[in-house]
Length: 631
Image 1 (tube, rainbow, N blue to C red):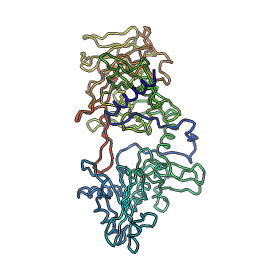
Image 2: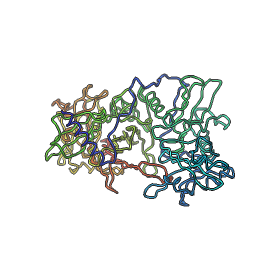
Image 3: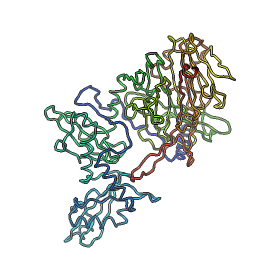
Image 4: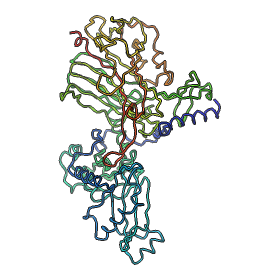
């Protein structure tokens, strides 16, 4: 391929990406040999991650702050001023003057008038180094104050110099991606979150008192701040244990108003950071707890082992129900992402190129059309080949229906570092387990992708284990069940008749047809606003090197008639054999207003903070015991 053709492809892809409003993914991870994270299992290096939540902490001081913020917005104002307790008489004048200055307030609303979360952080006498030559002259013989506010939505600080005597704003400076010292009000909130968070109390073994806490208002510049990834305002209150020569650092996110993470570190040791990076803590926590060891779970009659893989997402192993083996392995090994475009005549014969360090594949079609895209792998945040990385650890929560708990699920989040920007991706692996012995494997895409013409295909590998691996597969065809004797594939029309209006496939014991599962494809009936699986199903004979261990990305992202599993179809006999089901849904994204699907967009919430609006697309089959259906 010539250099000119490569440039054309790059421009074409970037142009399509612009439809989605962004730019191509740029690899931002450090090389493995540059990541200086010790994985030693030491108590004084223990990491604590709260359960992932988008809600502010349930703490009185936080609730009161939110109440005051809401009252400010209801008055049509966009900046929360300092309390009188933080101001002297001249400071009150300076704050009032600044809050009437259009230039000072020019970044406190979006172009369409939505209020953005802003707080005044400090109002103090101005010092010489803050003043321009012109301001120095005007402040000579007068009282001049500096008024600083912080915009939580844009991560910017604005500074105004106010002549208190003349009640004039002399200069306004705005600093993008920079954070000021925090106010006493936010210091109190940070302390309250650190002192009252259940994770901190549990870790210390008691409810700490305020005099045990230090550095509640300490932060560093943005680059080294604890919430660098999200550009949030964070501080690191610390509890020192001098007898054991260690300290518990609590990372408090003042943008989300919650505990983000915590870490034990040695007092006075060189590895104690001045400020801890939240993402580094997450990576280390995930690696130690979910990548480098198995986790066992027993609940509601289910027993299972789970762990994170290098490139096959979250894997469920050795699944049992009421003591009976159900599956050897359940996992989602790949996401195939394809986009449609025009301009195939500009492409050379080579079907892939490298753009920004990422392999981009393209496939020519008819009528000057082509598809391009990626094969995305999900995996551990370090020492893996994935580009969509585990975020926080697996979440285990109950499934509630009609106010009653009917089971539980395990959910793992995977994200590109710059999600939700265009051409960055976020996937979730979800495994649902029901008290009646049913289970469902679910693939979730939370966008955003490179354009509004995307096709997503998660590749599920489902190794069901029945009757000592003597298994039989069948599909429902014209009112009868059709057994498969050799390896093969089936393309669903999504409109074919279903057994008992629910089931299209089944896997059962070769010696006992009542032992096994009916397989219910998703047709939008699961109450999750999904639009169906439109699936392709493969059944192959088990071979260990065909995905039982970590699998490299399969096949082509962009040959829409192939899923990569075809390479395992060798006409082998599967009747009464150990078989593997490969289930590949197909989903089309949608960015139309009111119809969004497989999409994410940014916005401003009721508190004036940036939020991500999620429009997930959800796919995956449910396995229902045959004995439950055919009673």
